[in-house]
Length: 92
Image (cartoon, rainbow, N blue to C red; front, side, top):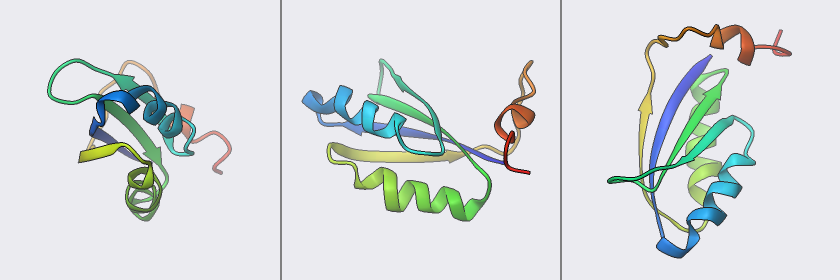
């Protein structure tokens, strides 16, 4: 499982619309509206690096209203929850 966090700057009047569209994409587990330098944060969980590349470049960034993005690829997850088993259900 490949996890990534995408930090997004959005056109001011399109934040809710973009968040809804992103949350509907397969591979995006959460979208957060945040305060600070960025408007939205998307959490991505996909099976492979190729799937991540496709999600970010072919599907996510085609959503109208996204002005800029920064993608952070996770090396290791530190959590009290067994996220790997939760998100791998049905992939076997």
